[in-house]
Length: 166
Image (cartoon, rainbow, N blue to C red):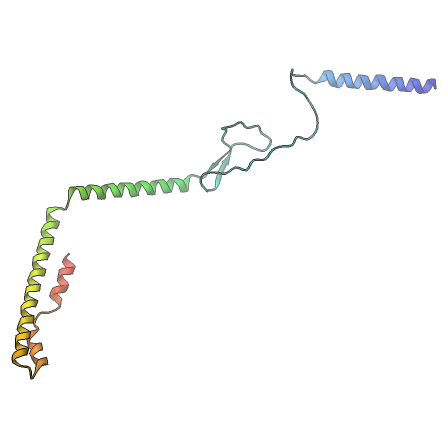
């Protein structure tokens, strides 16, 4: 029995020595509790306001982050392209607005008036040709197709020319 108590006493002294060495060896901060084991991490689902390819990650798993820290950056090439396209549309609209506010150029107005005079003259000519054909048809009702052929002298190419100039 003495041997058993001696062995238990030696084991108790060795155990106490190991505990004291491990406790005194590690520097302790005040207010910090050091424990061993597994830490459960809360996961968060995150997303960007715009879709795109992730270009860079600013943090890694197990690193501490605080509110407001950037975590990742998207490739901005597509977004920059959309912005420049939108700026081009705005610039085009501003130029068009400036033209509309300034009004038509005098050359454009004169061209439109000339086209109008030409079309009015063509209309008057066709109206006279129609009246002439109608008069001839009434005079010579026996051969209407021959009479109409003689009466219609306005070529179609004149009316097509007006649309090309405008």
